[in-house]
Amino acid sequence: MTDIITLQQRIADLLGPQGCLLQPEQRQLYEKGARYGDGKSLCIARPANVDEAAELMRLCARDKIRIVPQGANTGLVGAASPDRSGLDVLLSMERIKGVIDIDPVDRVVQAYAGTRLSELNQALEKHDLYFPIDLGADPSLGGMLAANTGGARLIRYGDVRHNTLGLEALLIDPPGERLDLTNRLRKNNTGPDWKQCFIGTGGAYGVITQVVLQVHPRPQQSATALVAPASMEAAALLLRDVERNFADFLSAFEGISQNALQSVLQHVPGIAAPFEPLPPYAFLIELSSARPRSADFDLEKLFGAWLESCFGDLILDAVIDKPEVLWRIRHAISDSVRQEGKVVAFDISVPRSSLGQFRQEAAALLEQSHAGIKLFDFGHWGDGGLHFNLAIPEQLIADFPPLRINALRQEIYDLAVLKYKGSFSAEHGVGPFNQQFYERYTTPAQLALATRMQNVFDPERLLGVTSYGAKQ
Image (cartoon, rainbow, N blue to C red; front, top):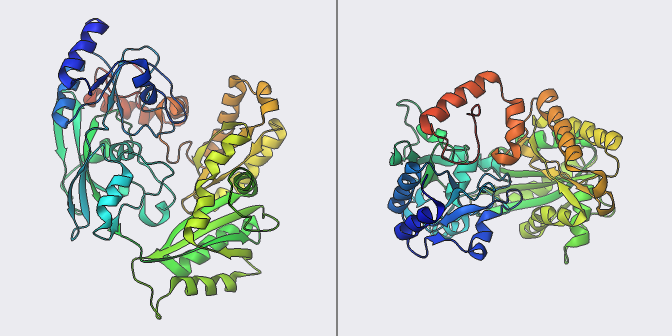
């Protein structure tokens, strides 16, 4: 293998001074993940265009240097972080950005992978369109596809996979070859849907360079309420009833536990308690429509009348407020919980009809075997997703060394995956953080198939940090 200094110089010569970062203070923001992943790279490669990225891949392939693609570095499973060997080239896509084309008739946008979600929506706003994947971070579009992000409005719009029409990717075999899958058709039944190989696979099969997305009309009116259910058993009936009454207008159904709500009130200034006392659980329900408000169609009035009809059997209390006020509570939870102690985060899903039962059983498991840990769960009840987040108080951290925390994770995941037929990663992906659980719960037949696929796309295992097949 070419020595490191020579390889760094070759990359610097190819990409220029802004395209190859070597100093530790320059690399720090790229090498440390948003939550997990803290490694050391050979360099941070920042190509200015797709051709430079392709040439970089050829250069690395010749010397069998692993490439770790990275978007905005907002992922939560370490999938965009180098290991600690100092031998990985971290390929940042942040300079390959910009909206290429917006077609308001087809409701299609094509953009480069490094474009941020906020930048995309800013460009779409003038056409009264938007990309409705609602996240707490501001990721790059390529990263969103690589992780198949979900978000709070999945119940209405689906995840990124459901909104992707096409993409372009760079392959590692042959090195740097551009695979053009930028078809804009909604109907195209001419064989395998090859773009799906690159969505949700964390860069293991190729580096996404362009995306083609279907976008949606911007809502012209909305109605939002924070609702305290009559009981946890009533939550499923509440969800079913709001879907029956409002069908496609339902855009979010988010659960917030009492502890999560209390944490926000304690740590975020300027937020008033929506209920007194706080209920054991609350649900943030949002309706929205691209149809303007009128005397004949006013979502707030319709929603208010429906809420009134639910009092007693399904609802104990409800607060209707401006959407930005209630969503501020929901989006503040993660940062608030970090101030409660050492966070042990779970991103799981089970059939939504089982969410209440799973939560009750998992909470009992914590009480029996891990006393002292506090539960701050919240999440996307409308689609079966739950951020089952725990906090270990400062005074108890010594009682929960890494081995015990890993055993706790396995207990919760076994409950979700094996008993409730759920997932250990509802929307965050696999990455190094979840690799052991992927291998634990994936069937031998799936692993064998994934191995064959990875051998086709990346026989030398030079792309990404996630292995979907058997280890070489």
